[in-house]
Length: 207
Image 1 (cartoon, helix red, strand yellow):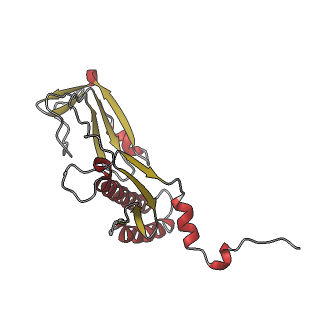
Image 2 (cartoon, helix red, strand yellow):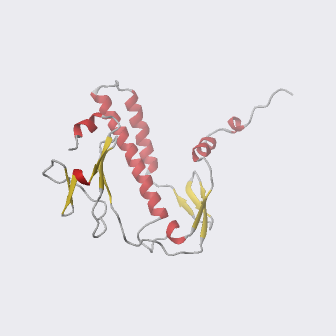
Image 3 (tube, one colour):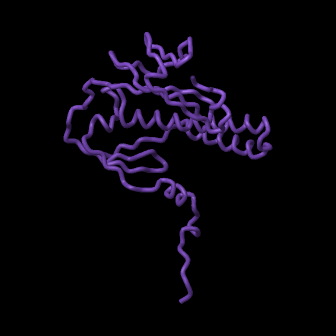
């Protein structure tokens, strides 16, 4: 049986894994051991036909959100058609990436607003007394903003690289056999772009 109170006590959440002997799969619903009611799951997508989960993982993230992941054996042939196309990707700061054909992909528009909210929430968290109820509320607010930023990035990346709609304008994985990405540290690039010219000059020793 899942002890939700134990997971809630952890600031960073936690997870619990259940094998076939610890849950039941009945009529598209998940019943954990010693639980009469199924888990109230809001499905992100339907399971493949004639597939039953072999392992279930229940997770609580730092933002207080519950999620359930199911491991199934999908026997469908999902291989993409082979192609001879190749593409190179240049990571950027002002734009998310530049493709070798000259096309540029802009950064998600909502990230700047979320980062602004994150800065304000982080400042508010610093002013709270650690361990107090107000501190926990502020910490949860920061964690939820972090979760929104993470979800936004993952969703945008998935749409750029691979989407289910074959008529989408940009599908790097569907359209290309080889994708080449330069090995750069975007974090260092962003730090250098914010530096002044004086900061970028290397100091020289005495002649």
